[in-house]
Image (cartoon, rainbow, N blue to C red; front, side, top):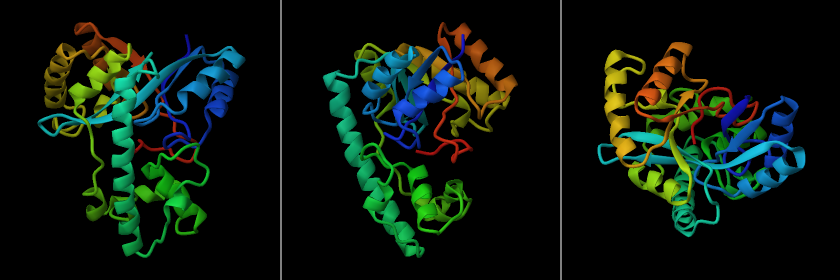
Length: 269
């Protein structure tokens, strides 16, 4: 069975519409896909409709940025969620406003470097009002500041200066994200675990030992899966993650983290 349970659309920081995503994956003979936009479910309804038309199974999903009480930052994927759930939608509205505040600060930071952007310019080509960091790159390409959107993540420049990296978007707790997803009837999955920075060198024995302890605690809070297969994770690492999931009774998921052909490296939201 050919699946991809981690895909972004233009409703967050992807470049394609939900309909274009469905067409692309149908043409590549996928059996099932999940739309998992950052902190929003605005594109799910359209994706479900286009999926039914194309006879491609589409799963309603989301990816929520979180941090726990110890400062460990993670992304939690939600699959099979009820997009009408009131508690989930209420909290997503809070995150929408918090992201807007973060983006206004990033606009001011870039202006201080000599790169003038307006919010309206960032919204060009968007399906909604979500703006992620890749959208800054796309806007800077349109203005002629850089040649490729990916350049916005050049170490020490643009959005990767020390000052820009200190501009954080507000996050909800990991426990709350899991609770919101399961409360909406969904399964909560730890996304791309190799990106977690607080457990030592990613892929080291120390890292895997500390990650397993972390995941065990999340299982008690309702975690249901691990994204064992992700482009940032080597084959050996993926095997380790899959084994960890099996040991802890969790589902194993696979995702491309697709944002568009213009964003190739690991994503930043």
